[in-house]
Image (cartoon, rainbow, N blue to C red; front, side):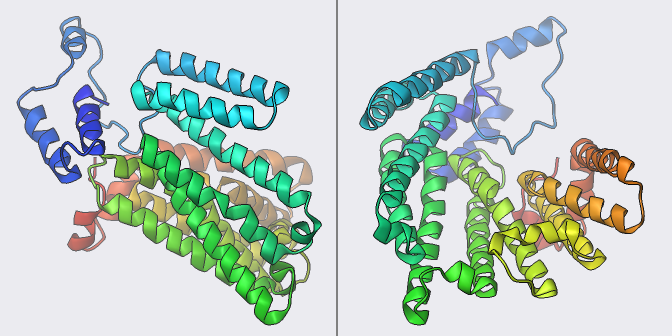
Length: 373
């Protein structure tokens, strides 16, 4: 990523210019060779490799140098040490102090991501400890879920307001969906008198999960489509939202489909094993769901929708091979070979495959999607 793109993105994040102005300024300044790194020109003069014209526009702003990596290692080691030696409030104090220095002042990208994750882990650990030590909450799913999720939106919103880390905004939005789910289960439990709605009403639970995953996907696409060139922080927020939404959307679809096909009893989240131990139809269902998700990933240029389905692809492939009497001693290697081949074909041919798929869509849809490369 060029320094010019980073500078314009930061300027938009600080409110100096709007995101739309940043998008229009980038090609304007680039065409006039404004903001080009001297090191790039020097490397060209010395005959080194030119920048890859197929630069991955999906990648979020993680690392801007090995300095980020070194600082991040220090942050992780320090927080782990504090976690083991001090009381539970020492890590959160360290997170805030480090965020003030590394994120607000020095604007380091990778430490910002790590500190955001550390905040979420600390909140989760603290709330889980409280819920598990309170029988009235641990024995009642509908109430315990609300108490478990409620602290996340506020803490993440404050973190984003202070430090403007895209991951914190994505986690905040995702936590709102979690709070919505908890509220729905609470209302459902109040109406039905059930203290564990997912166990008592599995199909209804899966429908609710699928609807919520679709809502999260719609929100991620709103961020994605507002920045088709992927030059602002909205693209980073969309990346993180897609990273969480892709598995949620895939597995809520698969679990609902398997439950409807098999009508089996048991815990809601164990039905995925039916892809392997169920019938041929269930394996095909999983395979179709994975392929559809991969197609969606190609269209919107998000590889999270491919990687999210690799485990399910392996399970479905193993089930199909087993039902076709493949030797048990070779099934594992065949699955690894097939999954690896799929990953390589999609990874190497991503640009060409995406061009083939997107060009068959209506012109109006193509215009709103990320640019073909």
